[in-house]
Length: 143
Image 1: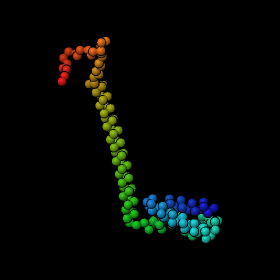
Image 2: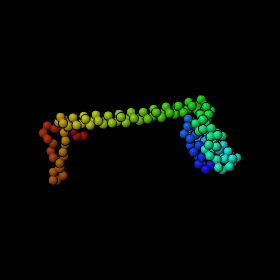
Image 3: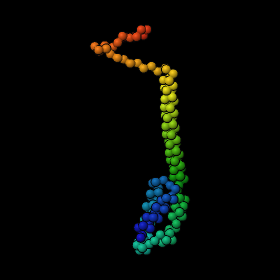
């Protein structure tokens, strides 16, 4: 019963901690060690109620630990979230620009085809492998 109660309590605390991954893992290790010491003192049959009486509710403990977060850590977390938001918005803008460019290109191509501006050139070779003569009025540039 002790393992399940401690794991559940740790999960609830982890869910409510508003800090970065490194700090959160450090705090959770400390809480886990405290829970294991508490379990050793009081036997293996501790319940969630026993843990709450000793440490407080998971939300209370999370709030207490959140008060210990330094200003530097808080600024770093905000900067990381801001950077992530900018990257996501930039990726969406690039994808949208690509999609719009393709739509415009496809529309122009379709419009040119419908208006007869697109010409298709077919080159056929004669039986002996030489190309046919150029049509009248065309200029052929050679080096």
